[in-house]
Figure (cartoon, rainbow, N blue to C red):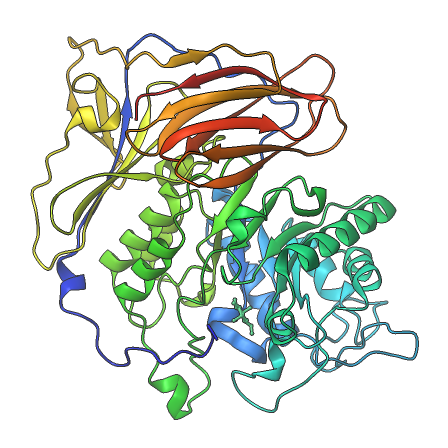
Amino acid sequence: MKRRSALDAWRIPEVSLTMVIAFLLFSLSGKSISQTPAQTQPAPHAPMGWNSWNSFANIVNSEIVQQEAKALAANGMKDAGYEYVVIDEGWWLGERDSTGNIVVNSKQWPAIAPGQKDGDMANIAAYIHSLKLKAGIYTDAGHDGCSMYPDSGPKYMNSGSEGHYDQDFLQFSRWGFDYVKVDWCGGAKEKRSGAIQYAQVAQAIQRAEKITGRPLFFSICEWGSQNPWFWAPGVGGIESTIWRTGGDIIPPVVETLHDPEHDKRVITLQNVLDSFDTGMHPEAQHTGYYNDLDMMVMGMRGMSESMDRIHMGLWAISSAPMMVGSDLTRLSPATLSLLTNKEALAIHNDPYGLQPIKVAETISGVQVWAKPMTVAGRRAVAVLDRTDAPVQAKIDWDKLGLAGAPRSVRDVWNGRQLLVDAALSVPAHDPADYPANKSKIDGIQATGGPTFARLEYTNNSGQVAVLRVRSTSGFSTGLALPPTAGSSSGSIGLILPRGTADLKFESQQAVIRKLLVYSW
Ligand code: GLA
């Protein structure tokens, strides 16, 4: 079971104090290899916002959510793009009325404005909307929810949505929620198939959206237990989604609960690095479909400024969902400035939304991670020192698929140019251009390791089309590509698995228009 795991209590490792991470953003003057075709709709980057669990666990209530939403709206995070305020487990204790409608505690969720009724979740959704933010809610795919394993206080059964999918997701949407996280405590207990349950949830969400006309973003939370990166992209025909890749970074650290259990919880850098390491499934992630490395713990007990920087850097370069689980009313200026760093967020919000690949580790523990950005010839690079000593990292430009030193290098943290050599004009390696305009392409070479490719497609099926990727390495995954309108095409970046790969659309009406495969 992934939750309530024992923490490495008390000990903040010495090593964290000397950890360094640098983020560099390169621009090349090399010929522009491909123009990015217009998307039919703006590409959804991974969601950003706040989630109640890490800092408030199951004591969440209306007052807390209002305070946090106010902080988010006022502390610069909203302006930086954090938009969701998500209420996690603890808002509902499993009670339904005689027609199966969810009943909530009216003291926990009272009226907030004149004319409202106590015990109506529409109150808090309206409050969040009044701050021009979006509201999120939480349930479980099984009969029982995670409140059967409470973080504190008594346990409650039946707080899951199984048997009520249509009713509950419509209710969430009618209350005004824009986002729903669907957990797996009940599904795991019943030994269900995640692919089947979450497809049914996705379909119920889409039916609810049709009725209310309000988008309800779908967040899958089954902790990576059934390898969701293989089935979650496009599950149940959903047009955008995220899926958790592992357990919780930490059990919640609730500062107001002074019991021995909560008092001993301290976050270590290893907790954060473990979440990053288990979350790397670059072949599954692409525009609109993201591996979820868990809610962020920046500024929480145990996190130093350098640990915050590593955390922010890794989530940004991974284009991971950035749902901050900290108490926003207590964030230091330093943590806030990292969370709102414009250049780090530009990397996070890059329309291709790819994960990085580890391109070098010449000294053990000193790793260079890099990913291609949508602008041809541009890379985001993280140098991560996991050792207990500071290092002078040297970047081998070749390892980034660059034929020489870049034209410009920016240090994201300081917003400064690190190295400029305008006289140097550096072409990127030419990509392999595969004959296209068909629904399948075989024999794509990625024998040197995970390989970046750009793909243009049309999908006139009117729904998400799955592009099956199979490699001689035995790897197989599906990428989900939303419909395109008329003759316009869509474009994604993708990471091909090591080996020789075949790409094939499962729908007759979807066609690969162009495929460029780069040499790293
Ligand atoms: C699981 C999830 C967490 C949180 C808790 C609530 O552990 O992984 O993110 O939602 O349940 O109990």
